[in-house]
Image (cartoon, rainbow, N blue to C red; front, side, top):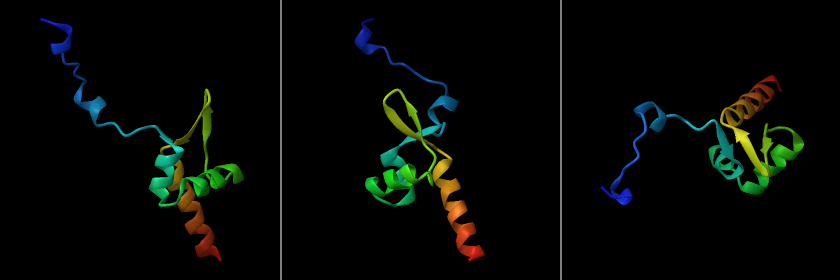
Length: 77
């Protein structure tokens, strides 16, 4: 059996897990905004993010939390 013919399989649970962190581009796609707008939201503190090494990542629940805050603000106004 050669190494090239070995297929690595993962448990079904691992294949179906949602990501814990998103790239800025993925977060922008979730919010239906551009990358620059997403970085502006991060810079202003409106959208939570963190650095891992030199990479900026957005927690997967942060876009939904941002939208929930925006909706609450608009309904209060």
